[in-house]
Image (cartoon, rainbow, N blue to C red; front, side):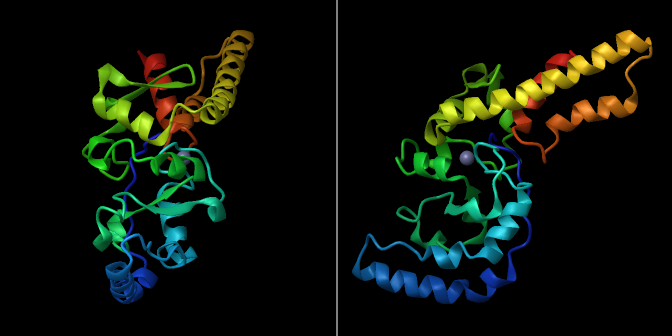
Length: 218
Ligand SMILES: [Zn+2]
């Protein structure tokens, strides 16, 4: 995503070694106090966070902004209030920036109504698009609209970061056009690859750039 398509790496050994014990302790406490949360120092341990961080090329799974590794928050895609058994379940651990994680806590929509960045069967580009830096549901997609609301992907902070990246992109395209005009030579393969780089998975806001690159190619 925003909602990027993320391919999950194998479960970190540290989680595999500890999860049963952690889960048993958490479920015991929860039986007494139903509002007890799992220990974030366990599921959010840096050895687990670091694998989640590599999986997304250092980006928040929801808004696609670049993170510093220590700022990434390990969180549960399906909330532990609904599914306590998934508190230490590897496929349920995601990495988020603080703002997306906070937006999510307002529980506007259940996760199964929204896009899942780790589900390769639901390409985000079929549900989300952009007008300039503003994210929109594509073709009135319900899942797209709910995802934008759930994670507040339309917040000012993101519009501001996206417009800065868009300006970089536009400056780069202008520079190529001017060079082409001045030299009379066509744009080289290498330069085209540099344009395409904006839409690569490791690039910040790659989904937005894919929308623009597609429009350029059309
Ligand atoms: Zn985010």
